[in-house]
Image 1 (spheres, protein in one colour):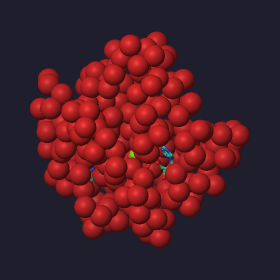
Image 2 (image 1 turned 30 degrees about the vertical axis):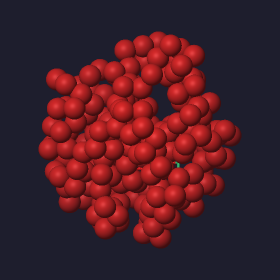
Image 3 (image 1 turned 180 degrees about the horizontal axis):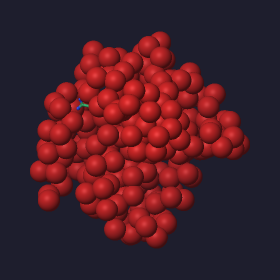
Image 4 (image 1 turned 120 degrees about the vertical axis):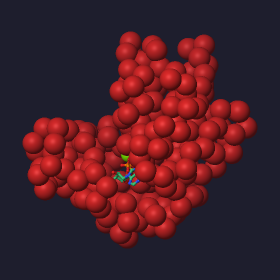
Length: 214
Ligand code: AP5
Ligand code: MG
């Protein structure tokens, strides 16, 4: 099963993608997480990506497309994968289609997690991410057992650099300009499904399972 998670920054793509990956035993591929891991390790890719990410801009397509193309041909992707945060532009979507076509495959679902802008800013301000394993929490909706400490690995939590309110606004406008057109793109391919991302996480996940089939 090959799935794309679409949705604005903070819509809950990562939260849902992780659960989908666990349930269907397929890799969760988040370009944002890959970039953040590279930043942490101080790689060349990380250095390049950081300048864009901190501004709320997209990392250029040429850096992003190759990364995903290399990842989805790996052995663990043979039963499918869930893409989170990719594609984010029409050229990225076209490049993905081309890579899959060369493999004789195609995407099965593009799930749009729909959340209005008003709800997003609140969510981002409350989000906390683990510095070590990347697990995501929310100070109100998913608090950790011990404040500021990751339940999974015991490391400290941080507010992501790009979750500061002014950067969130920028990310939302970039989303509307460059990523939202993908809704029409996948609608045209007949694989678009929309879920109401304002519902509690558990209900959103139930809606997704109903689409994918248990
Ligand atoms: P990326 O890491 O993909 O960030 P994003 O799309 O901005 O999305 P987020 O991770 O912020 O949100 P999410 O939808 O995953 O929500 P989450 O589940 O965490 O990208 C970061 C940057 O990397 C980009 O800005 C860009 O620079 C670069 N980049 C990445 N991919 C790229 C690409 N393909 N091309 C170019 N550049 C790229 O949830 C958010 C919060 O809400 C959490 O606290 C969560 O607990 C809470 N929450 C989730 N669901 C619910 C719910 N139903 N109810 C209440 N709270 C909820
Ligand atoms: Mg995410």
